[in-house]
Image (cartoon, rainbow, N blue to C red; front, side, top):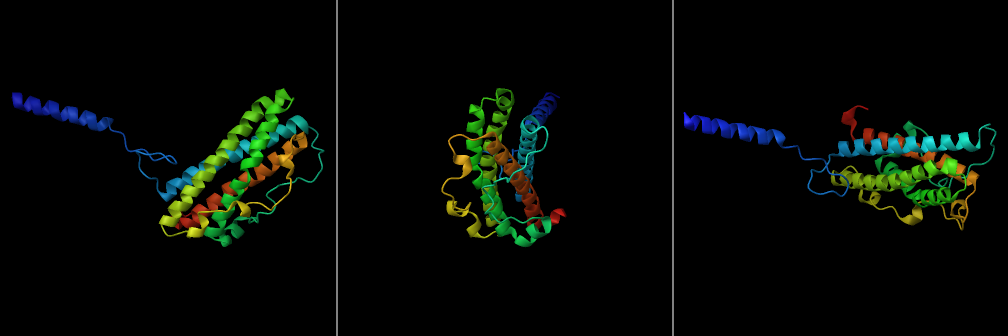
Length: 229
């Protein structure tokens, strides 16, 4: 009887310990001590990040227009520094572009926004319109960090696609010279940005962040046709 109770207690202790054991978490980018995410999981994570980034950029642009352009009568040429990056204008053209070229386009867009967003945050933080810029400069800093993180995530995804034989080696590295057309002095590098410069940057980033989100969705569907998306 004593032996029976001993083994019963031991079994209950073992069961309790087993229940407490959590599954191995999925690795964050660069994290150790966890399982490597599948390609489908990488795509899901990147699309969620790009969706959030696009949402914040849309909010920023809308807030700017409500504050500075309440009458919606602003007319002018918006100067997007990424005009030289050839991008597909719809889903069908993005699908026809192919995985390699579409991945390059995504990386080029993300790379091209590192400096402009940093400049936007710096300029907004110094602006005298404190009622507007206190919160928006924090959002500008947030999307600056998100672009860096998303760019690293897309690079990791490209490496995973390469390992699984669905992407060529040439896609992994994108030379800085190929990012944007050369310009002696882009407007966003001026010492002092004007409010309309902020508007141009926010407009252009909203446009490009929406492209990144859409292209990631197309890339997932063409890479993982079993998802039926």
